[in-house]
Image (cartoon, rainbow, N blue to C red; front, side, top):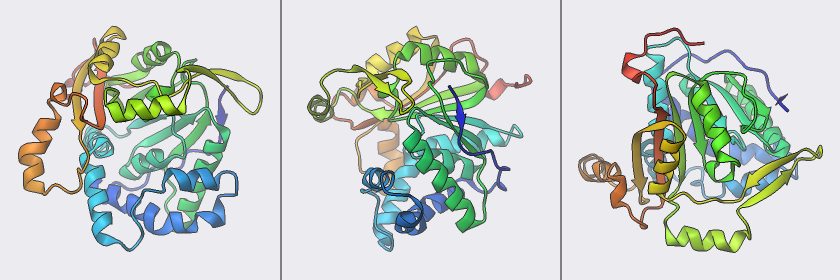
Length: 311
């Protein structure tokens, strides 16, 4: 079942990717979060505020600067740069935010210039996301091209995408094989699947996961009674994630690990030492905290050579 929650708005004027990226993140911290009690009702607000409780405080410029650097160097920044580069070659870029939750990344990538479909199973998350989208349009005067839908991504898809973004959500999708088959079938030529997730071999993560769930494969029952298979925090060690992608018919284009502190490291040290080390994914072992993986269908054309018409 698919339920449209918010209609697509015209794409905003394009600007330098990093400027647009940081402007939206600052807006979220400095304007949206303080105003949340006024436009997100109780029942949705508590979960929203709890999820974003670790954001830097408005007015703490050093902490905010570190946070922005870290985001730009991490999974979201990589994706924003890919979208910006794609837009230099094509008139539109369509992004699927798979497991969009409260819609932060849907709005962020729309601010870069993409057309975004945010999909989630939970109507409460989609409701809060739609309220955020409307609040952003009212407060900023910029209607972002985002549409939120309630759907099960292991079932039928109806569109093609340039990029499928899965952030902290791959561990919930079940059966994963059906989702990956749908991604492979619906990526436009040169398109990519981008996964941002924890390092599933980190002992601290594994210990925490064991304390919050009793079984991985469970069931989510929606308020309307519809039932969906649902995985609860299924961890993916880097090597296992690569194997899963290859078995599903993907070719891994990029894989890097993050140890934390991305925003603290000075630019020269980051560019000369840390960034190259991150790309040696096999060196992270169990110490890395997070991972970014970018994959494309194994038979797809190289993004640099994509000249065919996109549907």
